[in-house]
Amino acid sequence: MPIYQIGPTTWSTRNPNERAPARSDLPRPYVISDEIPPTEQVDGRFYTSKAAFRATGRALGLTEVGNEKPRPKRRFTDQRAVKAQRQQAIKTAFEKMRSR
Image (cartoon, rainbow, N blue to C red; front, side):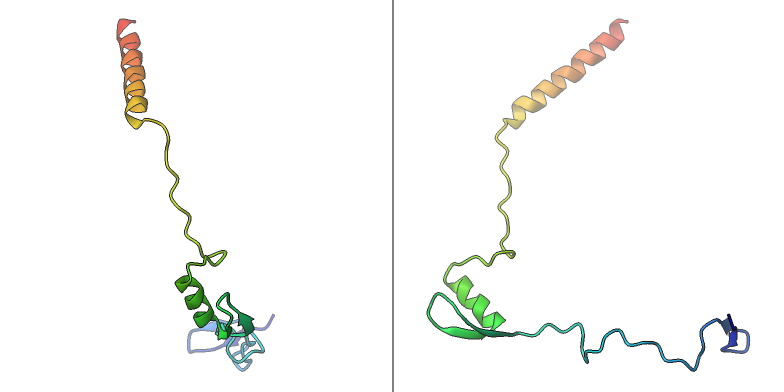
């Protein structure tokens, strides 16, 4: 493996004259387009913009699958009763340890 001098005191195994390979053949690989094929929303109109399609759906009260926010789960146990049981168990354990 050849070693190249790239500075007065800096060396590398990478040829400084070689260009780094491009990440993609596309001109802008990380840009997501807003264009979609003409798609009908429930209002009967056809949309070619994702933003307009989603805005219409939200205005009509529709939920887009994958973007919905789940409701928080509710606990059905009585938290005071659970806390009281835990405190009683700890108190009993301390009393057993002291009595030894």
